[in-house]
Structure formats: structure tokens, C-alpha cells
Length: 270
Image (cartoon, rainbow, N blue to C red; front, side, top):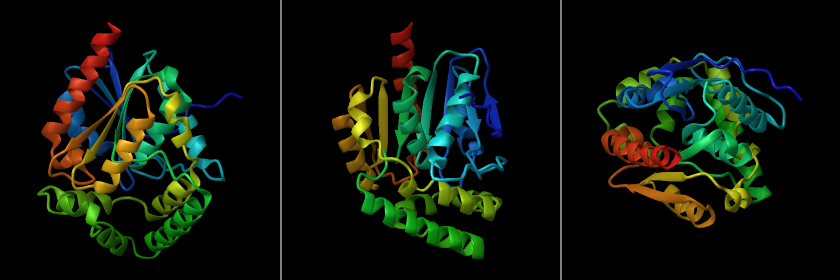
């Protein structure tokens, strides 16, 4: 079945003739979240920064029980239309879940995958049901009181290092510019509780994968350890004194490790 090119807002930073990196942002974010990283990498790579469904300027949100898989298919089509046979893929949190699914379902599209503070989903049905119900309650709060939701969201312990960061006030104001109705729909349809579990597919991986977790984000440090134990061609990078948003909290170290990883893959390919 033919899959049309999705109507995702996207921007490209850097020379389009250079090897491409596709960056997938997290919930509440947009492609603009990656601009500092993309600007730093633009002399070596072409950085593609899409706005995911319901975020930024992408007003479409897939619906139905297969919304997550349809989003993965949309992203694969978008990547297929880039002027390269393969790309590097970087995904944070929600974007990391999508990146994991892409890595395992369309491996021919990728040279490497970098997963940040994310997971391959929930392994048992009961946990998925509970998570979907929890996310639906949060989606309702977004519709009723978006600013109040944001304030409560960033009080969570995993965001404590981000909330203490000097850039946080500007980030918070940027988050407020999102469309609450679209975000609510995105949270409902792309919930961790409504996506398939990809844990059992990890041993099939054949793409170099780097999993990044902040030292203080102990939940995702443990998930990362479990993933790399199951996933061939993968390794874990722990970022000292960082939480869930390590790519912002210590951007210099993140870029250093990312560039080292990407250059290893480029040199291997060449």
C-alpha cells in the first residue's frame, strides 16, 4: 500500500549535500529544540528537524488504535524522500520511542541510532492499560488548564535539573505557545500505553545504537542497561550530574559524545 509523504513541518540546518541526521524531539517540544545542536553540527552534517504530530507547526495527529505505528510509517516515508540512502537518527524521550520503532522496523534507512532518555515501551498489557489511562487524565488536564499542567509537569523530579537550568524560563515560555488541543490528542494517541512493546525485537537489531541517560535519571539508566544487554551493536553512555534532558543540561558533553559516535559510523561506512 502506498503511503503518502506526511505533512510534517520540518527545517534543515546545514548543507544538504552533507550526511544527514534526523532529530526527533520529545513531548511538548518541537524541531526547534534541536537548533543549538544542529547549528553546532552543521559544518559536518545536514540536520533535519521535524515537528512531530501535534507539536510545533505540525497540525496533524494520527488517530485510531494504530496511531503510533502510523506515525512511525509517516516518519519512514519522510526519511525515504531525503536525498540519501541512509541517515543517522537521534530521538529524545517520545522521539526516542519513535526512533526505536524506526530502527527495528525499517533498519535499511539508518546508519546509526541515538536514543536519549527513552524506552522500547511497556512489556505487559496491564502496565500499558494503566499508562494509557494515566496519559488520558493528563490529556484532559492539558485541555482544561494548559499553563497549570505545564507548571505541574516540570515539577516532576526527573525535570529538576532542567528547572534549575538558566534556559528554563525561556523553554517554559516556548512550551506555552503549543496548541493544547493538539498536544492533548498527541498524548492520547502516542501514549507509551498505546504503542507496541519493542523489547522482544531488540535482539534483532543490526544498527549501531548509542543509548544516553543522565546519571540522576535512574529509571532510564536502568532501562538503558537492560536495552544494551539485549540489543546487539549498542552501548550505554551515562552523563554525570544530568537528569532527563541531558542534551540541554550538558550540551557540550552530549555533542562531543554524539559527534564521536557519528564519526565512527561515517568512517566505518567510508
